[in-house]
Image (cartoon, rainbow, N blue to C red; front, side, top):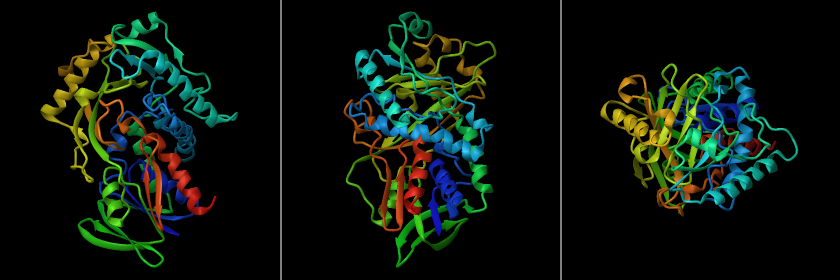
Length: 405
């Protein structure tokens, strides 16, 4: 078979590799000049085990994320090898309850243990590969002294140690992109914007523009693996949903700590419009704080062509605002001077999810990520990964279903 994979982000690249490795011919299309060059390379790289979704009491999101997280490491090692720079992970994250959390500390503690139960169910007595971390011990509640050693105790009212880590998204994008380009069963077509997909008698016709020239090609199957353009392409094929969708533009700050500066604890603040700090072994840290870093929101099917990097005054505003707000309760950040950080990068992109209200609303559907995955209509298929974590899992799931393996 020859299969068109539409979108060369993380999901599209994982899918192309999974199909090609099983002997299928793949044509991979992306509108950008390089693979995994937008949202997939402009985030913190967190491989979520399910601990973040304390507002989903059903635990369906936790169960989905556990499956995705435990599939991520084996998939990437198969294609990239264990020595890949992508496996230089962050320090494990503490989950911190902010004083304004939408869930009280004891409720969060109960959720974290229940979410851990979904990890144990996924392992099911076997072994788990998760970047060298042992996933079987559950989250450990910090002592008050531990918590107040890292955070302002008046803001961070509780904290829990977990084994959850982030990969280096820039290294991952580079390594995985090279792997795709070098695979003999994958033809990569860059600077190609897909405009439509139509069913024909025994094929799917994919149409668009490549390098400014119109094209139309037929494939045995076509898979929509776009990110912020997925909904519009689905609609062109007649695949629609009655569910409300939001596209949110959110940035983060990537900075290198000065020599001798204190190293902040990797931490995720829950539940509500907060943020996180991710600390990598080379002294690079990633910071995001919701009130400062969220810059736009739209319910349009096709969002604006938001930039993945900020420059000029907006970059300076996000950088200084993020450090200023987070240093109020993270002492290790208080010595950082935004004006002395010319190499700091402000990067991000669209977050695409089911929802009608933002996460300021405790009942918002944005607090859930379980209604994601694969939708098929004949030979046309669409994949909503929901989070970076899920891309390898859905790549293998789709390939197995298509090939009957």
